[in-house]
Figure (cartoon, rainbow, N blue to C red):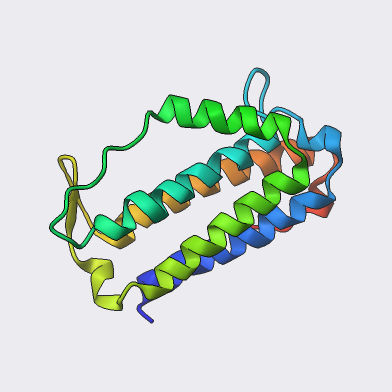
Amino acid sequence: MCHDKHQIISHYEKSIVFVESLVNITEEQWRTPIEPGKWTVAEVIGHLTPWDEFVLNHRLPFLFTKESLPKGPDVGEVNASAARNSRAQSKEKTIASFTNQRHQLIDALYQIVDQQWQQPFTIGASELTLHRYFASLVDHDLHHFSQIQRVLKNVGAIKWISSI
């Protein structure tokens, strides 16, 4: 397996361990905003799932074909809907949804041949490689995971969660 592919898949596997470890925090900690006036831990985790689904179903199947990429959804609408869903459902359901979707994405990434990881493709006006595309998604995850770790450390829950 090429190094780039391995790095991305490794991150996604570690992200599952990290998110699954959040089952150990209290409901109050799960519903704590990452900063005043910002999303809660629940909402941050919940908003990742629809984006994994979008990448899996509306990006990966089209990247190396002659077909046009489907238009992306409205970011604000997807995030608002995901936040609402995360507020309404249990911690366990949000975590399970995340892990199930992330496992599906990992399975799809394993199916991509190594040579395609450096093959250029275009999204809008941007030319990317699969590695660069997923590296930006990994950076997005890490940004949010560090926010979660920071707030949970502040409320004394850091000992219960896995590091990423």
